[in-house]
Amino acid sequence: MADIKKCAFLLLILCIGLIAPVTAGTKYMAGSPELSAYISGTNQFEAGDTVQLAIVIQNTGLNEFKFVDSGIVDRADLPNTAKFLTAAIQPSYAPIIIKSDAQMLGDLDGGSTVNAVFSTKINSDAAAGIYNIPLWLNYTYLYTADQYGEDTIRYTYKTENVTVNVPINITPDVSVAVLSATPEDLNVGTEGYINMTIKNTGYEDGSKSIVRILQNGQSPIVPIDSSVYIGDFPAGSVVNCTYKVAVTSDAQKQTYPVDVVVVYQNTEGDYVTSRSDTFGIPVGSKVDFDVISPPSVLNPGEKNAIKVEFKNTGDATVYSAQALISAVDPFTSDDDIAFLGDLSPGQSATASYIVSVDRTANIKEYGLDSQIQYRDALDNAYTSDTMKVTVDVTQPAGVNAIVSNPIYLVIIIAAIIVIVYLVNRYRKKNK
Image 1: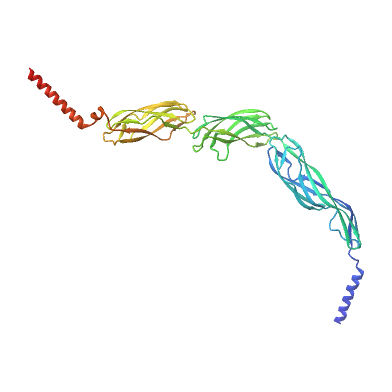
Image 2: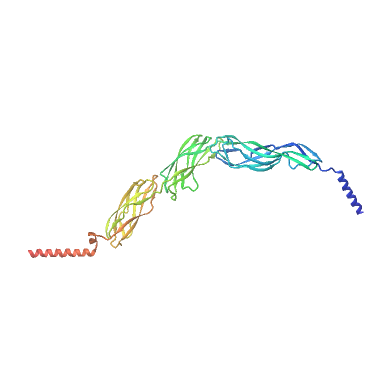
C-alpha cells in the first residue's frame, strides 16, 4: 500500500512538470536614465560660509515596452540604470570655491537617489542673490541588448555627460572689515585704547547694531570695554569706535590679533552676529627703567649725598614718577624718596639721597634696592621692577684718611696740645 502511494505521488509530480510552462525571460525595448539634482536641506547660505554642500541626485528614468517570453534570456542590466555614475561641480560665475574633487557614486537604479557631498566656500564678498551651480554627471547605461540564439546576448552601452543646474541662494548680511586700528598708550602690562575704523562691506543694512571686540585665542590683548552701540549700520557705511583694553604682563613688544564682530537686527527682525574680522594691534614694550649713573663713592663713617640717574627705557611716557631707595645696614638715610616728574621714552632724571655709612662698614661694593613709582596715561599707579644702585665703600685717602682714623686724630690732637704748650711756655719765658 505504501509503494502504491509513493508511485502515485511521483506520477503527480511528473504531470505537474509537464503541464507547467517553462520560465519566461524579460526584455525592455526602450528606456534610459533621467537624472536631476537638488540640495538636501536649505539652499540658503551667507557670504563667507564654509559648508558641506549635500546634493541629492535622483534617477527618474523608466523602462518601456516590456516583453516576457520563454525564449528571452534575462538581461544583466536595465536600460534605466545609470552605471558608474560620477559627479563633479564645474566652474561657474557663482561666487564659490569648490574644494572637493569629482566623486564616484556607483550604479544608480531607476527610482533611486544618491548623495554627493562637496566641501564649499562661499566668497566673503559674494553679492546676495540666487546662483546656479552646474553639476556635471557622467554615467553609462545599457543602450541595446541583442540576443543570438537561446543563450547569447550582445550588450551595447552608451556614455552620457549631463549638466544639471543646482540653485543656491546667498542671503544678504552685515560683513565687517576693519579699515584701521590705532593703539593709544598700549604697552605690555598696562591698559590703553584701540581706535578702530570699521566698514560694513556686506549687502545688509543692520539696525540696533553693536560693534564688539573679542580676545583672539590666547592673545594677550584683553578687552575691558568691549562693546560700542552704533545703531543703524547701512551697507557701505563706516564707523569709528574706541575700546579700552589691557595687555598682560607676559606679552612681548610685537603685534597681536583682535577679533571684531557686529551684533545687529536684520530685515527679518532677528538678532544675528556677523562673521569676525581679525586685525593686528601693535603693542609697545614694557615700561622699564635703568640706572645709568656710575657708582657712588662713600667712606666708612661718612654722611654725604649720592646722586642716582634713572632712564626710562620703555616705549611709554610715565607721569609723576618718584624713585625710592632702600637703605640697609651699614647704610642709613633720612630721605629715601626723590621726585623725578614726567619721563618720556629715553628721558632720564637724577635723584639725590643723603646717605650715612657706618664706621665699621667693610670696604667693598654694595647694592641698594630701588624702585620707581609712576602713573600711566590712564592715571593707573604702577611700581617698577627692583633695580640695584651701586655704592662703593672705599678707604679714605689724603686728608680724609687722617680725619677718619682715630689714631691719627689722637696723634694730631696730642701734637696740637704739645705745640700749644710749647708756644705758651716760650711766650712766658720771653716776658
